[in-house]
Image (cartoon, protein in one colour):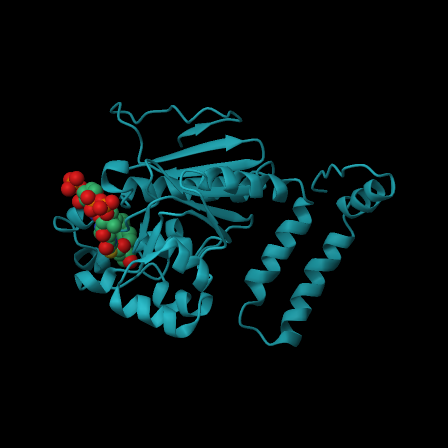
Length: 279
Ligand SMILES: C[C@H]([C@H](O)CC(=O)SCCNC(=O)CCNC(=O)[C@H](O)C(C)(C)COP(=O)(O)OP(=O)(O)OC[C@H]1O[C@@H](n2cnc3c(N)ncnc32)[C@H](O)[C@@H]1OP(=O)(O)O)[C@H]1CC[C@H]2[C@@H]3CCC4=CC(=O)CC[C@]4(C)[C@H]3CC[C@]12C
């Protein structure tokens, strides 16, 4: 994996052939920053990019020192979805029956997999098709004013197989989701904010800074509390309230039994900032 441990400098690793890898992974304190890195193609998804993304998601889930992840794109773009030019040579439709990939589970795009830690999207420029699809697998979304969103697959006679036909109507109002999915039109960041697809609209060029600020706030909170809250959100989606409370109460009580649940109130009483250990 392309990882530069605990440093504020950009990941400097290179592919074996000397070119920059299609995805960069950098750990800054408790935060893992994952950067889609094919700026000349507006960070269109490649097999290599998706492989590194899965490795990064595994790292987020397995490393207890990582408390938050950020997904962003290089060169002023988030992601233009599938590489439409590569598709002319190697079409997913032709390979779908060969068992080399599973359309029902695309872990790189967080379809059929969600992270155990919060994932923040920092979007600059276009987040189109697969770019808006992976956005729906993130928890908190920040975008620069010039960002653009859309689920454009139908424009090219394709299907939004990153999960949007299922997920988008669950995340934003139905008529807007249907409109975006069926017309394939692009929308502005201001519209995306109005529809609730993103949560923060910031000046161009500052999405990553804002995402880092949010990440630092979350990373300073009790990690067990954060992860249990996130698990409750994920595991209770679509359940009846009473069934959901059964799950929620087990996860919540486990947090109350932790050392962190003693550290927080003690720090409050002593007018100190709590320093959580995740135990
Ligand atoms: C099924 C999913 C997913 O649902 C399918 C898709 O995502 S379809 C993709 C549709 N994409 C678009 O509609 C975006 C097209 N681009 C644009 O509209 C514009 O370019 C832009 C708005 C993004 C940017 O506009 P600009 O004016 O700023 O810039 P522009 O001049 O247009 O572009 C600059 C240069 O960038 C090139 N470019 C832009 N976009 C793309 C693109 N999408 N592909 C290639 N190149 C692009 C542009 O041409 C310019 O280049 P020049 O040379 O300068 O002209 C699928 C999502 C991922 C799939 C999996 C991927 C991995 C796999 C591999 C396999 O072998 C098996 C299958 C699979 C697992 C595959 C399965 C399906 C997916 C999951």
